[in-house]
Image 1 (spheres, rainbow, N blue to C red):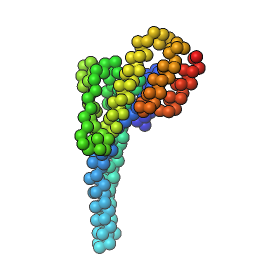
Image 2: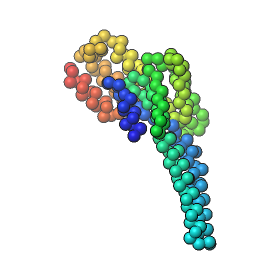
Image 3: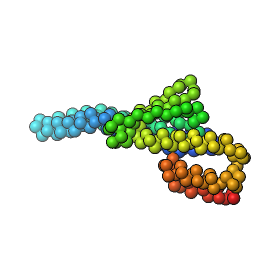
Image 4: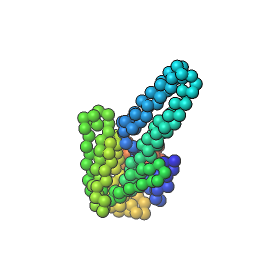
Length: 210
């Protein structure tokens, strides 16, 4: 459902380069209490039923709260997405009510990344995206694989700039530009900004123009 909503936000010729979420540590820390309470309820009610009879089984009603709360925490975590497209950076959150914040790559001035010792060990960190918009700073906290996200964003910004600045790009690349474009796409593929399938598809399109 979240992916369908994300796709509905995309403009014409806008493509998703990378999607990530907050690190799974945050999910574990959110549902840990519910998991412990669920185990306590199951063990406690089972023992009580054996000692006091079937009426003690009514305690299983408590599982509705613990399991429901755990599912709520999971879907809350699942529906927070950090997205890099070929035009912008999108921060999407909310299960039912959606909150979308996006920053145009053209307005991104700098990116600051912070990783603690454990962040480097388990591959998570904080990103601050400094923009020229009214918002100024967009903070992404404890996202998974922050280095890959930062690299994908900077590569997309650079690639977008080269698309706009080079002669002939607005009406299609010239034949002499095609090998250079393929090399740029290959570099994006190696850095994880685009998939192997996306690289091959775009490569075939470019070779067809030669």
